[in-house]
Image 1 (cartoon, rainbow, N blue to C red):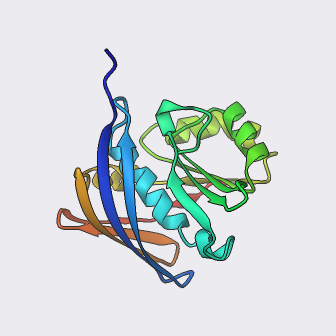
Image 2: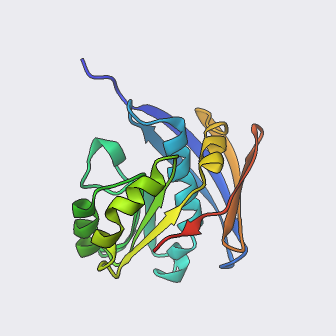
Length: 186
């Protein structure tokens, strides 16, 4: 019998000073049995960093949600979908292959990858030339220390505050606070 996903609930208060976006989001995260707390929290941070797109791209008339992630490789880790069903933003976390990213670029207006962990540099060196022609793609590196610290904030029921300022995000809860400064690779 297959092991089921673990459900996490997060009440996320976002204060994105860079983009003038302030909102509360009640989120449900299904953590696949093979997914770590670190990866799940990077997904949550990525969504928080891009939440302003809800207003910037769609004037608030869209759905910002987590996808099936590891359960379905053809579904994004998070996405912004407008009321017509068009994918405005496709977010991937980790070190995806070039073919799924190419496919994502054909399905969405914009694709953003947030890579993390110690092997990210090796992944990037091996895939950079294959991804250089994808105009819709951005690749960001989350420093390993920050992604590992994010894992310490994971709880089944979370109350989180996300502050986005000067391109960085600070995620805070009763468990502590983690400051993340992503580095843009593409």
